[in-house]
Amino acid sequence: MSDSLGGGPATAPPAPPPQTTLRRRLAELRGPAVAPHPLDARALAALAANPGCRRRALLDGAGVDKAALAEALGSPAPFGQSQFAFMRGNAFEAKVKADGGTELMRLLSERLGGQEPPPAPGEVAVPDLSAAGPEGRVARTALALREATEAGTWALLDHPLLALEVAGSPAYLEPDAVVVRPDGRWAVVEIKSFPMIDGSADASKVGAAARQAAVYVLALERVASRTPGAEVGHQVLLVCPKDFSNLPTASVVDVRKQLSVTRRQLARLTRIEEIADTLPEGTTFDLDRCSGAELTGAVDSVAAAYAPECLSACELAFHCRARARERGAVEALGRSVRGELGALTTVTAVLSAAHGDTGDPRDPTVAALRRAAALRAEALAAAGTAGGAAGPGTGAVADRGRHPDRTDDPRPTDGPGRTDGPGRTDDPRPTDGPGRTGRTEG
Image 1 (tube, rainbow, N blue to C red):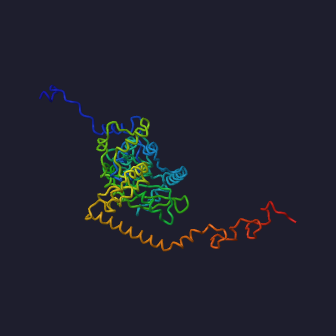
Image 2: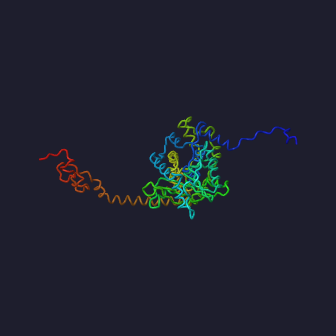
Image 3: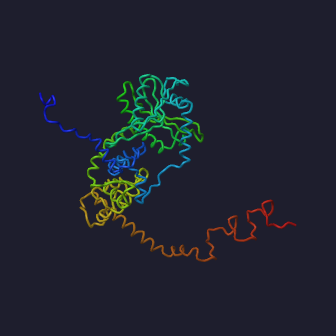
């Protein structure tokens, strides 16, 4: 009784929440004075594509600028987009969203509207999503989605901000647009500047856009789960320039497959706090305080899962590739090769097993390697025998080009391609006319 009235011993203050401790730890890794580098949908899609890479998970979770880190390590990646591409994309997006999104709503009604007529001009609400900080913008976006769903009217959210927890750290995502329909369905709109020719676009670019859109849909589902009457559509509206013009056209992309893959791969990501606990004391990726050697040691202290596919998705790919080659790791040859080789993890071990120096001959992998080595030796021996028999012929070929009076010169001896004589008659240049300045008349 006395304890309940405060007469007992004082209770210990509650421990700080784990998330606060984690954020402090990530700030130490990034650098206390360094602002976190935000994750976008492309980076998140690349992170989900390689869930076993602890290095990328930690650096992305801590908000480290991997492009600047790669530059400091001496292995910069040639990533980026030209200013012309940025300007062209921004101009096309502004054209699509002009006049309160009239053209965009027309395209959406044509492709996803079904029997529902398109909204009239002025019937589409465009809420103001401005707020202080990313947390404020996320809260403002959620409020606008809830208000539009409850009102049962059309709404166009221009560049809303969504949050998605990735490996224990929030990632902020900004789709091009989200449309709220009167029936409570939400549709993601992706606006791209690559052309859609004759109703179809480049398959690789469409696939990349679908993976990004799947990330947006996944983040929207978290908001819709807290909004009564809301439903996120799995069909995304992809808007591109039509043919070779700047006129917008649209196509529907079903992202259910990409959504399933992204959800499964994000769930498999190693949690950041588990990775941070394994680092040596004092490890930091602060570019302002650490030298190149210190940054190299810090990066190498985190295990990476390199694959050739990383070259098109990660800024640290060149550094990781160099380290994989130094170790002779078979990962540098590709994931499929690594999977086929089983317990053989280095190129040296593979060659030793193929030559019969090591390895159990009953192992199917070792047996296949030795069989491949035997076939290669037979092919080289046969090629050497054939090359020796054709020796005089190869010598004749090698002598070509040594004698100026040979008759097998493939170059023309006359014709418009010869320019070695002023007196030749096949000179394609005019002998008179206004373009000649050195001719003599008379």
